[in-house]
Amino acid sequence: MMKENLLKLFVDNTTHYFKHLSRESVEVQVPYLIAHHEPVIFDYTGIIGVSGAYRGYVYLTAPSKMMRFLLQTQGEQDYSEPHCLDVIGEIANVLAGNVRRELGAEFMISVPLRIAGQPDKLLLTDKSWSFAIPIRYSLFIAALVVSLEEHVM
Amino acid sequence: MTMNKAMVKLMIVDDSTIVQRRIERDLQLPYVKVVGSASDGVEAVQLFQQTLPDAVTLDLTMPNMDGLATVSALLAIQPKTRILVISALADKATAIEAIRRGANGFIYKPFTETELNAALRELLGD
Image (tube, rainbow over the protein chains, first blue to last red):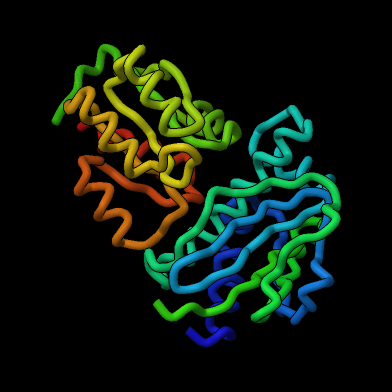
């Protein structure tokens, strides 16, 4: 699939997810190219490894205030770090898993790797393209980063 | 298949405790009692052997033992158990494979409270 179409899938799925979550405003903005050594990163990050027809990573990264808000939205009252990590991983899993509706089971995804804080380095695929998709949800800004290369099976 | 509405024991399996709690909170079927929650397939098999639930909601993408393997493992213990898969994996092939292994229903994440209860009602023959 052309990368423009692949990115559109992620944009559409991300829009659908956040609209589904609550009545808060959501604007998923135009993806922009990022260098593999300059990853976009906020306070909490959920990383999904991708294998099969594509290889690389998809990750969702968001500020702690947004995580607190997301927990509130889901009826939770405990905003501790384990819960923030739980939610960021779960949302990343849904955003990556939902693209299989179009890409099929050959878009294989891992269980989420959850990170709090700013890691020293985050491995983006340096052999391919990486795009950040800005997400404006309510008063917050987060990003979905898609770092993939096509793999001929 | 219509199950006994006097009490249906439900087990929830998902690697997210937030999702586990949301399923329990959204559940609106008075004849369904949650007997426990598990975070992966291995834990699910252990809890299943202890509680022998009538029905299970089951995630697919989990550590240690994934959901498809868990479907087979749980039904090997108690074949009559009804399994509703709740997964982000939105492709048809995965849903078909889950059903082939013996799952009885499939809904996609994200799901609404209405979708969850409708799927459980259908699962339980209500």
